[in-house]
Length: 429
Image (tube, rainbow, N blue to C red):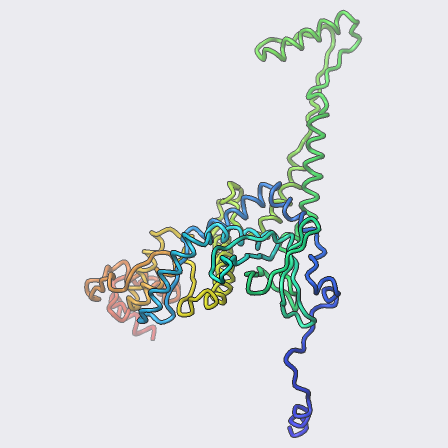
């Protein structure tokens, strides 16, 4: 133990030690050069792929549909309440935050990083939020990954920003990398394959062979000419009879897309949905919707993804509020839930039947988008509780009965014990 202590005492104390990855520590990279990734490709993927565009739009909409608000760090402070009201009006009506918020979320999903300029009026007062093009932005940092500034490069023109002028957010930090991971990178090859698949399908449709191949055995030129005329009439009028002279044969020549190219496109689409976690039914894809358990699992994964994005934005906004003059408040998204109100209220009733305090029930509902005060919840006496709710609560709390106890019924006392067959119960003990 003494050896370890002595070793620690002899170590040099430094402010920073860890280094950024070697592939990003070049002089150009550290001085604000844009990442060596084809970010233009990610933008094209968003704009040209209907599944990606619809999925990302759904994420943005769900993240922001219930809006946001500001809350005092301490409920009883008059200053905190005043700042909360003022900040809400500033963000929503003066500083263009709602529009920039949608842009920031879409940028996080597409590029993994988001850059927002905090514009001032020239006298140090906040004027507005302004979205910066992520694919044009570079980060200036030192060997230890400390961000020192930002550089926007557009057509050879460079604009420098300080760290105070830009709100920088990452969707997925990884290791000691300064930039976040790129969400669309894992499916970039799938996207390229999808493009080739569509081109191949388009070529097939443009040069598709005849649907039916007709064979006229030993037919002379007059017979062939007459048959062609009859065929043209039949094509224009489906009710017309097709007459052939002599021995004739017809063979279908249609291309079967179902087990080939369509399956490839479905696989590519599933990979896109895996990245976004958006339930397929939200995109109008109704395959395998009979599996309710699978649908609920998908909704849970999507809710988790949404809440994570909201948490990233909340943390970054709250770090900058003091700089904007709001040191006594916090920014938070208003709660939401993808469950319907009926399901939430039924769960709340079961919680009340189990004896959970009304404050906890109110908190449960509020966190899921139903803002209800504990004072609005009427507590009923246990004798007046609905019998069905009480039984549902017990069923949730105890294991399923086995076969030998099947004679037990819902006629139980307050301790959950049945007296229908006390003798058999005693014998069982």
